[in-house]
Length: 355
Image (cartoon, rainbow, N blue to C red; front, side, top):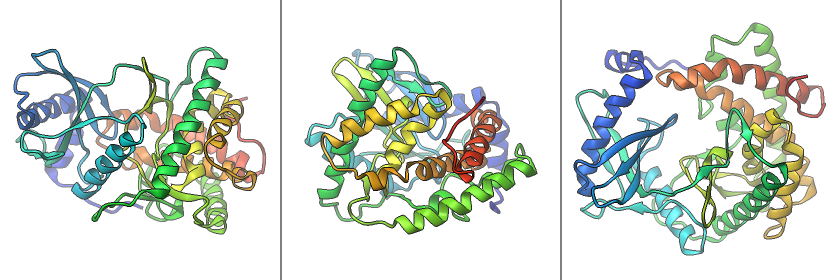
């Protein structure tokens, strides 16, 4: 469980409202834009969860997305590694965010301002016009047949991404997180420890801990053979898939790293379990994936374990982000949902949420 004690300045920033935090981060974004000679560009907050993402509209009509990274989540080397892989994927036809170098030819910049207690890394990419396929809380909206077609395409894209990662010669210094049993359901999970959440009851914690123990055991037994483990996107939620004019586009490679290939599917299915469409979308994903790359039935049989592992990590997310008020608002909702999934999992029943 967490034992870090934040400074008074950090606590003061966390006490600010979301709007006040965003306003200060917008000042930081404006300062960062000088490194791209975009002084005076119009800035608008798009998303504030893990990182703060701003839309940037320049005087010449060009548009960009600026990421202000959460302090301590990703290192300089990890961000540069993420960008290196996105650029390598783009070279083989995978549509990834196009990162723009600073005027000095660097991929990112580090910014400090008085109103934000910690320095933060910033990077810039060209804007992608498109609508999110869905949202974490709501799943995928619209026609079920179209949603299935989208998940079939996502499966194909994921397979291409995995195949590239398996064959790619990683550059010197390449470093990304590892999504294994320790980082997902270990004693110090990467996202945060759900045991730190005050909204969970003793009964919920007991159910969750039982599920965690079973997940650990099964993941350890599954192992990390080359046919099941490698470099992946790591966060193919519907909100990280854009429906653009030229097709589906994967964005937000912030969690890319090494993990189980099946983990990619489990991540994308989490919001669909809530929606009741996970089984149909899993079939569509597998159809698309297997049109490019093998995924044995014996591996797919572990999907409930992967889904619960991902669910438990998501439940830890608000525990590790006390400064993000939207994360705290999500905590009771996630607690209820993940406890239901955990209860089904331990009872060896199909994973369901609600009545």
